[in-house]
Length: 319
Ligand SMILES: Cc1ncc(C[n+]2csc(CCOP(=O)(O)OP(=O)(O)O)c2C)c(N)n1
Ligand SMILES: [Mg+2]
Image (cartoon, rainbow, N blue to C red; front, side, top):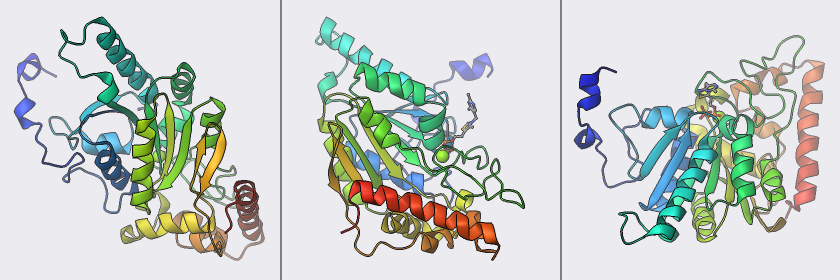
């Protein structure tokens, strides 16, 4: 950037409307994570600082000198969402301690500090920073928006990519069924750090999701939310079907919705007549190789179904 540009004041151009997550961002049509940002900001309100690592939501919302955010917002490098949020929280505590009247900062008790990262940024490259944040006990809500791959860089698999999905780094082919691992359980990892409130939610149920954000923000200390947010481009489905696919992931048990408090499961959104995962798989291009009539495909669907059934049993998911 030239020094002329650096000297220029773009403050007036950082326009936003009344909303805290504003239209006009560059997200694709039908983007699930964009809905998640809307619900997070609606639930948290304007007295919020968002710390966001690199990923689709950062890239689409912050093309300089514009911003979609009506809250305070800081972008940080890919692995650092939790570290930067931790530092902000520690700084506010220090300000409060020193001289709250003298310094022009709000009392940190009234402030929401939320880190919002993608599945790659959270469950893979940023897990060390997240672990430190949880272990040190920072008063931060960490929200992982899960679109099940590294979408911003072209659909590479992550530890949240489901079994059998074809991605650019787990391509299906003669020798490959696609991704050959199941989703890493981030809720147990968070709970095992002693995090008081851990929950999952889906963009298909905004009421439930927003209530969980509000509830989490009432609690002092680290909190972790895993929110399911389909991606029409990476999953290869028609963009109008985002909410339907998120709902189907819940109804098949692929993505169970529940809360954990002090390490125990305290509420589960029970499912009556849980649907077979096949109904969810066959609606997405990333699984189309599983329906080619070849022998290994049936085994792969069975393997995923078994993983879901076992998890459902552990959680008491079936009504
Ligand atoms: C250290 C580092 N490695 C790789 C990248 C490239 N990179 C930027 S965003 C991204 C993928 C983000 O994936 P995820 O966190 O799941 O968010 P999504 O794009 O899916 O919303 C990658 C690999 C980077 N910016 N920094
Ligand atoms: Mg992702």
